[in-house]
Length: 289
Figure 1 (cartoon, rainbow, N blue to C red):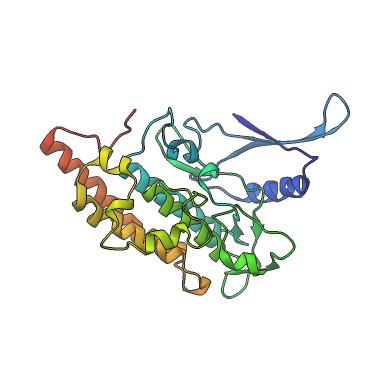
Figure 2 (figure 1 turned 45 degrees about the vertical axis):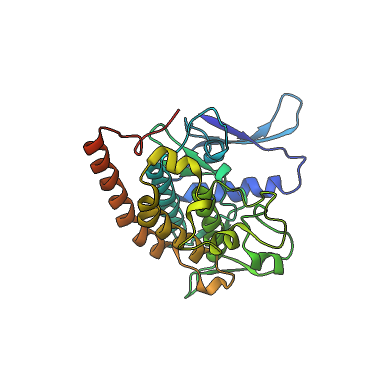
């Protein structure tokens, strides 16, 4: 088990605690972190104590795995595509398969945990919001102008202008996550100096000049060179860019994203199994340590 203890001296933590409890109480999905129990009491000094006890996810956060020079290993292309699909399926569930729907509001690598089978689990619902149930299932009906929700670099641009919280905000954050997994660049990297961004950086090279900006670890681990880029990186980059459109109404939704990713992931699995069988090399499938 893992325990998330709240710092109640930090502004908004109590509100976040209740938001997270409300969200987690209603969700049941294998790609969302499960809650074991909730603690709401006093500590030995008589101070208020709040904590959420969660299932233990053994391989830590995606953020750790993506950092250059980490000690845990390098993700193969197949693992990256599986994680991208796992997160999309979790968010598609939150947006479309519970009533009322939930907007996560803080999708980023540190909130994606990997289990012993490298299956991704979305965690940390401290900023989550319950959507108003309307015909579009898209708008929460709550302005974000009272305080920006989310993390710098992953936050949808419309939120900076006081737009309502919506499912499309999660889509934008997810798109940034996808592009980060393909390039190895964080959206807060020093090369993004305010005149450009990670989505713009990828867009400038898409689709014919992606090769120089693809994370070198993908090619080193998976092999295949330009063929791998054309078959798998280009279509996934297309999805990432479609999620990051400035006009929120033009972004993909998670139903569409999952529909495109499922056959692509199957093709990737089959491709590397065939390549591995013919060469005796299965490095594209596992983890390089």
